[in-house]
Length: 225
Image (cartoon, rainbow, N blue to C red; front, side, top):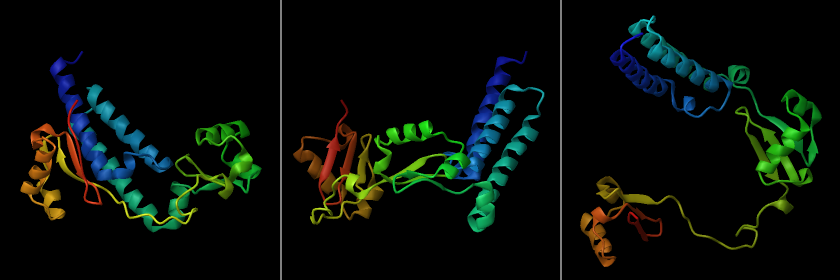
């Protein structure tokens, strides 16, 4: 039985090695989008786990194997982006399961899905009548993308001819009581301006958990409970 200190050390090496490896392999290994990325995650996780508990494995050699798998995953990912044929072979392609409310049985069979499974996935999308579906597409990741028929979609301002202004993303000015000077500069604002706005609310920067500048120039702030 290996000493506790050795177990802790090997686990730490495996943990940080996995972080390095996933960074090398790319963001796609963090969130699987295909069989390729799922295989990369399994391989990297298995090697890291073996490094942590299998004392018969050489730490350096196993770490090199971990990095090698990460590099191969990164190169393969770059290759499938460049070559469409390889992408279709390794990643797969989307498959239309429903078209104009009708189930495409041949495609459903190719996807190894039953009608009950398809209906269950539709219910997760809050669709209980298959006739309400214009298109349902099974993505390479296994997720189901659904486009309801136009009569069944939620009403939008565009449907009513109402114009709306640009919203965009807010800019974080304070996070955890710390002022984000870079975002202040990006929005052409000063530290004094921010402190003045907070003072009108009876707040100091250290009292604020989150302060965001919305796209219309309004300041939103939230203090810890």
